[in-house]
Amino acid sequence: MSVAASNLSREELLALYQRMLLIRRMEEQLARDCAAGKLPGPVHLYVGQEAIAVGVCHHLEDRDWITSTHRGHGHFLAKGGDPARMMAEIYGRADGICGGFGGSMHVADFSKGIIGANGIVGGGIALATGAALAAQLDGDGKVAVAFFGDGAANQGVLMEALNVGALWKLPLILICENNGFSEFSPTATVTAGRIVERARPFGVPALKVDGNDVLAVWQAANQAVRRAREGGGPTLIEAITYRTRGHVEYEVTFITEPYRSEAEVEAWRAKDPIGRFAAYLATHGLAAADELEAIERAVGETVAEAVRVAEASPEPDPASATGHMFANPR
Ligand SMILES: Cc1ncc(C[n+]2csc(CCOP(=O)(O)OP(=O)(O)O)c2C)c(N)n1
Image (cartoon, rainbow, N blue to C red; front, side, top):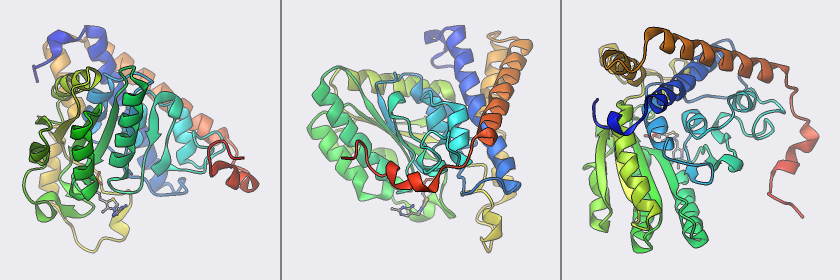
């Protein structure tokens, strides 16, 4: 981890740390809530992958668009989504960001450019491509980013996005988070070739980065976002990471045999992006221990407040369900 620090101020480095920690602590809370039976639906946690959302979204403004996946809390928070309204949404409450009707897999906030989490594997790639076309038509330098998994990289829609993105030079950034698994299948058992090379036939620049190194991700995204804003077209980034929690919380209740060893998970926990970045900041004299502790305390308060808001919020009125089906219904 050395690449980009000189491009970032100390405040920006601490902001990256804060945002990664916020995602982690929010999701640890959700893991506890899920275990306690407090959540009305399933949650797919992003633990271990925080450096990717944060390293990319640091380059984005509210007007830029992102699309996400079923594992979408990290993208939502990294793009500036409100933690309390996300928590209320996942609790299924009326103050949720989608009125409590969407839940974990549909956290969205158009005012922040967050088109939303998405239960259709690969679905966000198509949405981001459309957003990139809209951004290009607006002509004001906006970009669109699709976050998706290695499993989604096997969907035909990626080839369609690369094709039309290259042809029309769309301001599109495709971020494949290769976390080693598609549900319970190791990537190597379902994915031929190298994901990063899927861009080559289309003439789209592509690079592979250490997705557990927030500065490496920041650096790669810096180039890609700049190129997109300047009309240079799409980029594919494959970020190598690892999902240290289950595909979905409480999968142990229905999977019949282990699909990975504890030793493998432990080896990746040792490469945890947050721990690594904290060590980097400390050893380079960029943050004192008490500064990191202050960030930890502030994040803890944000999470506690999010839980308070969610718990205090009523359940939505079932009679209002159809009111959320369409934008501007006639
Ligand atoms: C079109 C479609 N096919 C299958 C599924 C079932 N499914 C849900 S998550 C998932 C795995 C996705 O793997 P990946 O894209 O690598 O994302 P990750 O879960 O690793 O973040 C699958 C197959 C789905 N939701 N949508």
